[in-house]
Length: 433
Figure (cartoon, rainbow, N blue to C red):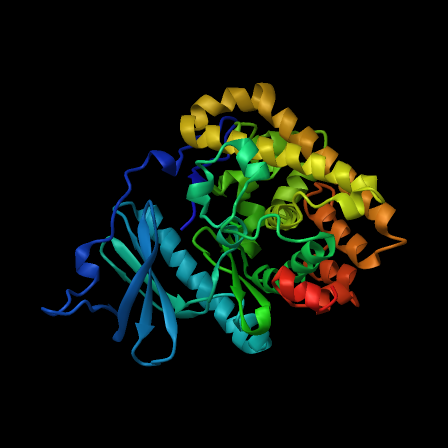
């Protein structure tokens, strides 16, 4: 479960905000799990008459815990069980909303999608609501979170690293810095080609609102091929009502992946989006909420995998070096502000955001988009497939971006990079990538 934040917002000139970081971390009630019989280590869960055997704990957050379990009705199926516990009705309402949205998305998968997409997101099995708790059972995706694969540690571990360490490593237990230019492009393109269809389907019913490297999964399967997926719909909201309700809907997600528009709202500039001289910020927040963090994840993966190996391409294409520098500036600032936000809270950060940080975040984002665009144009005559990938990444983090989810796939269509699904650098090299 991620280190996300939820801020309560109201459509008032001055937003009332409250961060979950200050809440007491509640544990699930012991009664939710049946005690094991003497001499055994087995625990079971009961959800609407379905018996699930708990295998291990997967994660724990402020209001609940997630377990891996075995579905006794389908012995071969691994299940993820999320138990949300709280005395606050709105927290339980969010847990019920997650279950209902996941149920809708599963029905949509069943009606129009094939096995390909079913491997890339959890599917609803059952849920129950009792006093003070909501239990949700869903299929479990294989693999590990993308950040653990990249860095060899979770987002919690990364929070203990200095900003220079975060940018430059080393991360010997992860894939950080293990790829050359084309290998990094291949893997990042796979993220696009495999997950854009998932987000396109999700957008028909919901906004995820917590896209990050710890909520994307990667599984290394047979022959070293990579399979990516999307998890954790705990902060998702219905997409049909979002454009009318965003002003009174809580701000949520991992602050490292927040867009400039989100930071404006956090700072108390609630009218800022609707009255801002550049209307693209409001449009970006209303219509492309998940595009921005996914664009950041793509950039994070690309520059983490390719880190330190610029010689073969930077000499020929200096714009790549400039794009890398702009990314480092943006990512360093985003992580620094996010850490201070967790440390000091929204009230302390609000004035600082208005006086200094928002301007820097916006200018860094603009510089990043400009550098990516320049690199895309420079590489276009020589590497059309790489140019398409750069265009997708630049467009997703651009407040004036226009690429739809399906449009992003069009940018990569026909690319040999997308077709190559090999994961490890060793196998990539053997395949001649």
